[in-house]
Length: 317
Image (cartoon, rainbow, N blue to C red; front, side):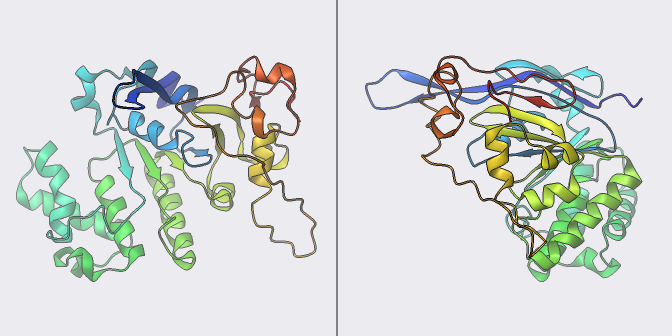
């Protein structure tokens, strides 16, 4: 069995913020204890509403920020600030906006070679150019694109360039932060197909952050559903979409477009608003919006329990 390339245990990130000029700082739990494993060649999707902790998790995995609690192990090494410099080549990220993630003053060749200039100082200029040109071909662009500027490309082409740049240091883990949400629907499938091809070719592990469940259904292997900094359900893609057990997961999936025009699908409309992360209610954070909630739900925080299909709910479906 393939050993996991990423192991996260009770991963958490807290921030101290002030609610007013004279008030004492409050602790905001942006991520409150997440556990998962990610293996080479597999895709783990993280889904949930805005503010649930998806992007915070991405920043921890890419070592942009240090976890407040918990442990993160990547490629057999426990991640601490002392090893960041050595491990950052192992993980790369593709951002949501292909327009803002590329330097408009640099040619594509320069953009792709920059990671090599910084991290592979023993490489000659000729070797860096050869590597960049090879990567341009790998992501489906043409040789003449090497000397062009980002503004000369479409959104889909720019995202291909961003993917190429992320792969220049031969990472083992790729964090995909909403990589197709800023693209036209007609282009999204092309980029997703490219990512699948690259994963098969390079045996990459993907952490796929998305709010589009239709994309997740066709792209991911496993799914974590998050709500207000906590994981509330974790299962394989097939299991989660066929038999969601957490009420929040069921409500999310009910919003996914259905391909069958004759099929009947009940839309679950959640009442109320997402609680403030600065004032998380006692007990289950979803209780105020849940149609199955009881008094017990408002008193205790349910743990994520199960074997292959894990759910954090006192009254699972």
